[in-house]
Amino acid sequence: MLLKLRILYGLLILIFFLLASGCAAPAQRTVPVEALDLSAPVPQGYVLHQLRPDLGLVLPQLSDPWIVTTEPTEEMLEHQAEHEEENALIAGRLISRAEALERAEQHFAASDDLYFLNTESEAHLLFSFAALGERQPEPAAVHVAQSASIAAAGVTAEGWTKHSEEQRAIEVRGARHAEYFEIDYTKGGERGFFTGVVGYAQPYWFWFYAYDHRHDPRDRDLIATILQTFEIRTTH
Image (cartoon, rainbow, N blue to C red; front, side, top):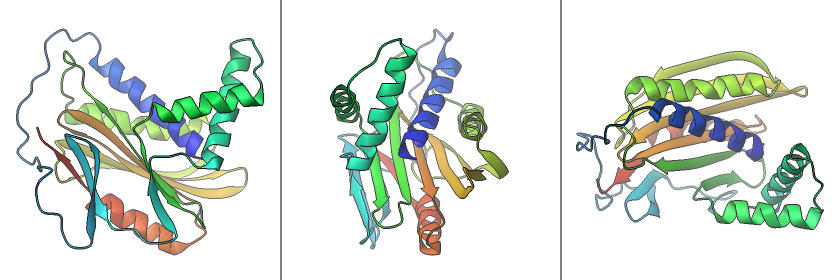
């Protein structure tokens, strides 16, 4: 499932570049009114995860069985290796399992994603981000909304049965624009829930996805709390 989330993430990256293409004017770098500096105090019960020297993510402190990691688990490597094998077949060649695993390791080594995993229920969240290029315009609220809508389209494209979906603009501390979405669906006879927040906090796009197998209602409550209370902090 982490692989599926990464596929949807790729689609959102694609729509970002499509929206940004064709604009030759340099990006406008105005200071966001709601910007939160990395050095600001962190509320009690929350933790700052510094992803880059100028980017941080603040969210509630997690306890066992949840872990926070930038390193792929064995399951994540296996899923990515399968994806590498599929890509090789599409390209018209076969690769060994060893080569597929090596490519999977290289894939994660090049990633700045942050993972939040429940090691018992397999519920998880994925936080990804991408900095604007020097000549890419800052996105407007409509661009963020369009990017979030790709998630719903991605669920349908995967062949999953979608029962309901919701999308709306929300406020995220430290972000200029943010859009929340949630999708209730069935895949292979298993009911699932996919939700997240897409947004922009100068100078970063960010994508915060959560997937819940509904094995434990406590996961749903925790995921909801995280997505409703997280903060983005930058030095811009």
